[in-house]
Length: 98
Figure 1 (cartoon, helix red, strand yellow):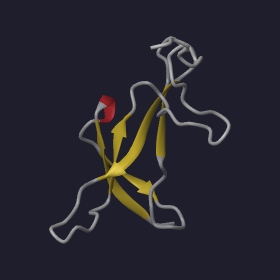
Figure 2 (cartoon, helix red, strand yellow):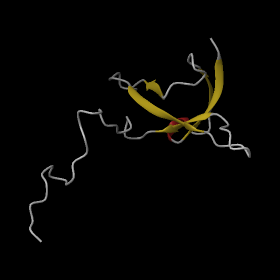
Figure 3 (tube, one colour):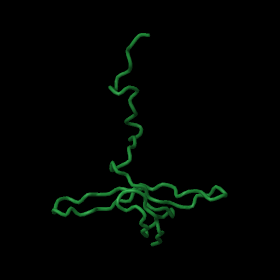
Figure 4 (tube, helix red, strand yellow):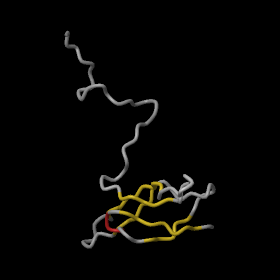
């Protein structure tokens, strides 16, 4: 299996570079999950990092990937096409006449 040294930004892994296995397309996984054991023996805390582009070269080519810390856990995504964002916070259309 091929691996690539990938930097991490933010969170407890900030500034570290780890070898990450690449998939069949040559890209690292979209999410990198790191289980951290609880010192009191409880369930482990899972740190989640998401893959973002590292930057671009002068020619506009992508330089590679890095991982950014996701403090809330998972990035919010829609489960297309079954859920769509609501137009108003209450989820009902605005019935005001104006």
